[in-house]
Length: 84
Image (tube, rainbow, N blue to C red; front, side):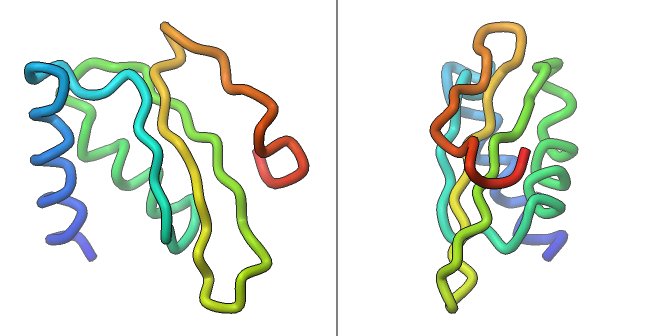
């Protein structure tokens, strides 16, 4: 998992001319802990990332989430019936 997170982090850090994304939607996420590990991979960007995660009832474990810069956005209510 660490190798995959490092590889994803490397690509994500290149977005937005090397500034990282303001908002990043993700699907097929294992759990919120993995998202936190991904944010840790993005630390060098200096962004104040937050997570809005929804643990679905899907039997395959396909959760959805978005990572957002809390200095630019406030998390919406799209997932308010889920976690966070």
